[in-house]
Length: 416
Image (cartoon, rainbow, N blue to C red):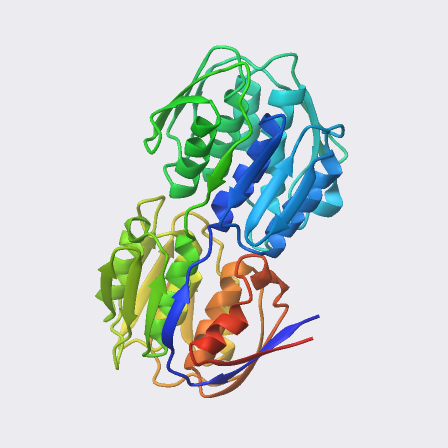
C-alpha cells in the first residue's frame, strides 16, 4: 500500500494547472447511459474514481476509451443493468447509474453504496425521487432493485438540498413522460454542469442554477460532446496549501466565480487573492489570523474544504472555529492533525482550533479524500518528516498530487 513521505517546512511557489472537476465528471459519465451512441467528455482528470466509473460502464456493456483527458463512452451495446457491490462499495458516485438505467432501460440492480469511511450518508432522497417518478423499488440482500415501464413526471420536494439526489432526479426525469418539478434542488456548479450537458444533448430543462428546476420529458437525448468545468475543490486545496506554507502560487485554468466563499475565508485569515480571468494568484501571510468558518450548501463555504481549512488554521494566531452543517461527523482528520501537534477540540459538529507556533512531523493515516489533502497541507507546514499512509484515498480525488506539489517546491515522495 502506497504512502507519502513529506519533509517540511516548505514554501510553495510557482504555477499549477487546475484539472477538470471530479464531482462534475462522474454524473455526466452516468448520464451517457441515457443516450444510444458515442458521447465524448473533455477535460477529464485521471483519477481512481474516474477509472472505477469507467469499469462500471464497461460492465454494463459500454465501450470506454480514455486518452489525453478525453473520455469516449459508446452505449450502443448496453446489455447489463447491474452495478455490483465490489465496485459500488469503493465509490458512492456509482449510485448515479441507477436513475439513467431505469429511465432508459426500465430496470436496474445497484448495490447500496460505500466510499469514504466517514459517517452515514443515506440515499433516501435518491430513492424518494425515483419513487415519485413511478419507479418500483425493492431493497434485497444489499441491492436496490428498480423497475418501471415508463417513468412519469412529478413534483419532487427535497427535504434537504442534496447534490446527489438532485443529479439523480434530473437524469431520471429527462426521459420521463410529462413534466417534473424539483424544489429545494441543489445549486452547486456540478449540478448545473450536468443539466447544461443534458440540455446540449436535447433535454428540456428550465431553472438551471436555481433551487426550482422544471424538466419536460423528451423521447430521447442524443450523444453529447461536453467539456467539464475546472475543479473548484482542487483549486481551493492548492490555495489553502499556499496559505499554510506562506507561499505564493498561481492557479491557472480555474473558475473564480465558483470560489467566492473559499476566497473570502482565505482573505479573512490573511491571504492575498488576486483574480485575473481564469488565473488566480494566492499569497500566504507571515502569520495567519484566526477565523470562524461555517459550511453551507453552495454558494456557501463547501464541506469539501472543511478539512483543508482546519489544517490552515492549525498555526493561525488565536482560536478559530470550523462548523460543519452539512456532515456533522466529518472530522476523522482531527485526531491525525493532533498527532502533528495541532490543538483541536471537537464539540459536536464544531472544531475549535487553537493556533500553535509549531507543527511537527509524525506518522499519520488518511481516512478520506479531503482528510488526505489536509494532512499533506499540515505536513508541508510542519517541521520534520511526516509519513502519510493509505494515500489511495487521495488518488480518488487528486491526480498525481505529489508530482504537482514537487513542481511547486514541496519535498514529497510516494513510496510503494
